[in-house]
Length: 382
Image 1 (cartoon, rainbow, N blue to C red):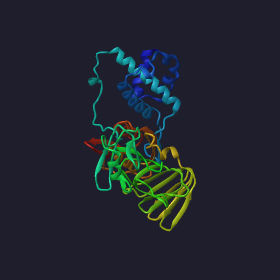
Image 2: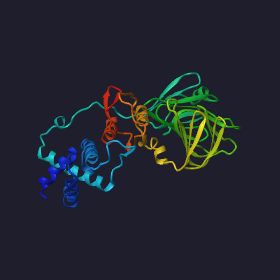
Image 3: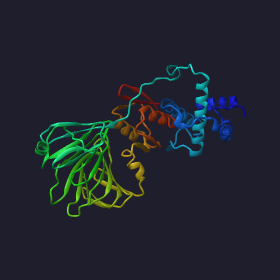
Image 4: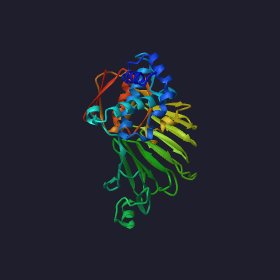
């Protein structure tokens, strides 16, 4: 096949008009041409981002042959074909740009409204009501009876003596609050570490009592890595649920605007209390609580549960559930001009560092739904 013919087919692939025969022929010639294309690491960041969007468009239009509406649809790509299309589209884009070096970025890029992702950030509310804005260039804070510092050891309040800080905090409760579009971590005085997702609040004592339970209260979502202490069980209160642990790793999702509270165990064991219900969880199990009803789900995808903590979204849920997560992380409101089908489940994975348009495009390519961005509002349309 001549290179000009291959490039012509590449154009149809990127437009989503290539036939299955053309796609197969295109991929067949991969090995003969791939060595002529530049490696990914050498491509400018701006071109990488554009390529990723082109890649997704091409693959979903050319490969996804599933019906327009089905109960479950997937965003996952076929790994081998996806890699081939990435490289070939890269060559196609590079060849065209090299052939026309005078083409400015302004002319070749369509600028659409977009919204940047969330970032590190939180506020710490002291017992007397004082609010401290925590640095967005840090990832978390560490609290003990004598000082309040960031995880790297720097002071949260510069030029403030430990004695003054101790007077403000010792023996009192404080709250860490993440707004929409924020995430942060806190190391508690007992060595327990907590990561807060967007739109969450954790109430905890600066110093836990030497005897009895270590009690914290959560609204929103958090991942707990609890320091083991057999003499002092760790208790997480959230709405009508209590989670009792000795030392373990688990995730709690208890947003007030969602019907279900979900507690997922990764390591160790926890006891869930909700109304008249009490249940011990095993690793890999999830307790779902709604209106005092408890359901235990086994063999949970733990990677999906803690995806937010690890910097990405992993979806396997309906559109409204996905948009709730997008609303919190990107600090946007969502307006529906359609009634989403709760049976239509989207499944996929994408970095939380991408602008919101990247996620919306993936949803559009994979379902009968479209989006408009107006300021900090996303409008869901047919």
